[in-house]
Image (cartoon, rainbow, N blue to C red; front, top):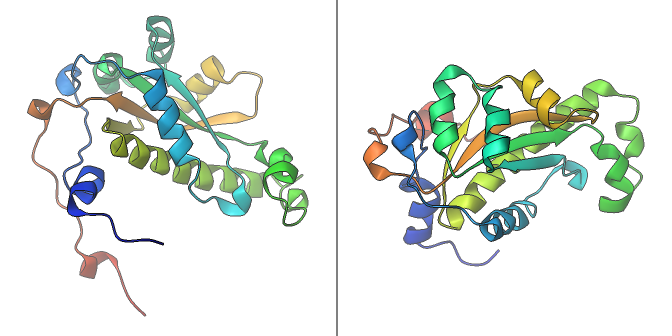
Length: 200
């Protein structure tokens, strides 16, 4: 690797970055371009996944029609903030990811690791799409956007509305836009290194 990032970059990605949520005023009335969403994915896709399996599939919900469709799957507490966000990413996992392994993982034939093994497929798809969703959050922040990742929705309903007839299953949502600092509350505590970590 090269040199560590400077403090300005670390602040933007972690220290001063916040989760925007709770209400419609969490987001400024400023659109997010297709180009920025594309740039964020093109960065996030470079993060590691096991056997380069890349199960992440994303639908960026932005149009009024798509937002109304998504509204039907949201928990009541998440409706306002999601409808106000310029875009919402449905982070999902393709459970047929292993069929693409001959193309994306040429080191050896990894298809037998998963074919006919639903538990291995589900665990790998969930774990790696979660990783890739986190990479996407970091990529969005790196490009100057704010995020509001959340659960609080019916996965079954989202899968029915957006992924019917596929082997893609939703994982979590990320509201995306330019956050309104006035909507933020004090940051909640984080565990100290000594509370959460061991070096053995």
